[in-house]
Length: 96
Image (spheres, helix red, strand yellow):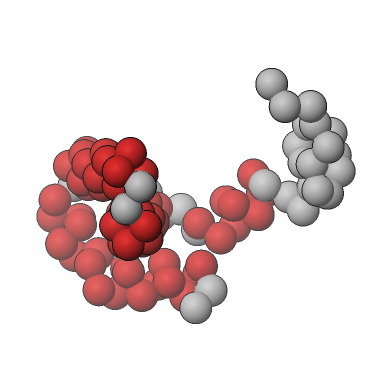
């Protein structure tokens, strides 16, 4: 499934609920999921990491829907097919 398709899927599935919850409370749910991902990473639990990454992405998509952001377009604009600093692909920037 492409990003745009997934975003539309999440919109159809959850938009009404997300809209009733509101942007601020949806943001809090997103942050909670990021915290759960951090805990899974800390523990090194690969199954939980996989699940939490999916949850974080789904909540991010819900936020994008609430703010009417086309996530696929935003990603393509922000992260073109080259490094923003050195202009190369793959990136050749020195690690800092």
